[in-house]
Length: 340
Image (cartoon, rainbow, N blue to C red; front, top):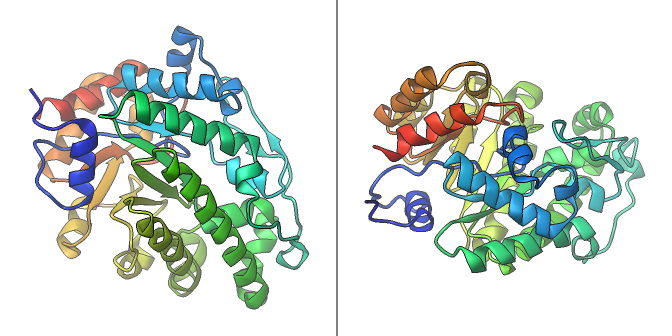
């Protein structure tokens, strides 16, 4: 029998304390496990659950109950922030995640700044925080993870992304102003989550990769604003997971400068090597989601055991799961970790 509750296990892992075994989680947002198979079984379905707090919390429970992941992860997409800041959303289907229809602004110079309190007025933010409140109260031993879209990715969801990336070089002052504005709204959103019971905040910032930005801009923009957001959340008394997509080779030294309590990475990254090079990092990841979707339970079970042998601190999928991933594959993954 486990000596710790899932909540205790995750919080102790993030605090670099000893645990009875490794936690296995899927934090929501870009990294959520709302599989079609689960939704068809339960009747709590997307896209409706993106809007309705009762459906959102039921689906989060369904995911935790069926997959074996040891957390609730909310919301189930990366569009809540952009919608609140002005971008219209296509909410997708049962099997297709929401997307930005069109960014609200063509240039960082066009952005119209919304006032403080904007997040609290968003109906989808309300659904998220009400769901977190309900789940954290009803299931206090299971960590409720609030998932945020990071500063650069949110900025690239309200400003045309190709223009935005060019303007990081050509219009630095205006770009910084926009990202600072976005970051302060993300801090507001994070506070609403924490005030409503979020145990941990997980930040996914897929635009903030070394491959897209290069080392200099990664440090100037990604590290700076992720740390601004993380430091503000730490002041709320809650730990932070930061997920960075893509290869790390170009920006590996800067990864150690991030203030997150755990760093989650893609399947391309050798987490064992990263852990050896930067022994202060709490590592999270990174079973291939391609493997989870297309392989078989036996292979997945064996690969999960490799993560345990490599002593990765928190075990999770590497990035975003396909909604068509077979439930038996996910269960093979979580079973391998729990029987440690």
